[in-house]
Figure (tube, rainbow, N blue to C red):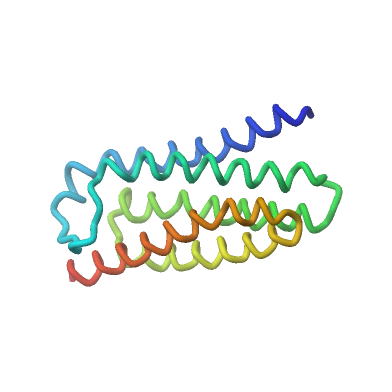
Length: 157
């Protein structure tokens, strides 16, 4: 497969995961989520879409850089498996938090997601430093989202 097609495919997969998760989010933003007590540091709702779009783009480029190293290599396959796991956890957070409206369960999910992102970064760094660095804003944003999620759990007991 040509490099350009691999790059586009890598980005599309990540962006489609984000779009899929956003269906749960959009359905709850103006209803259930609006009724929750949120901490003072909760950003405006409009910021999440652009931030996630950029993060999914960076994730796609990162995955492409690893894929470009060759799927025949065991460490590449392993790194992409970790990437896939964190992507599934990323999607499932939206389902759990917004779709099922279970903030505490979503917090458990996001902590697991954070650990999976860290494991992915460590594996990616062994193959491509650039690929690992591209995931740093992602783990930082998920760190913030984790604190926000926990604050929502505490404020809505």
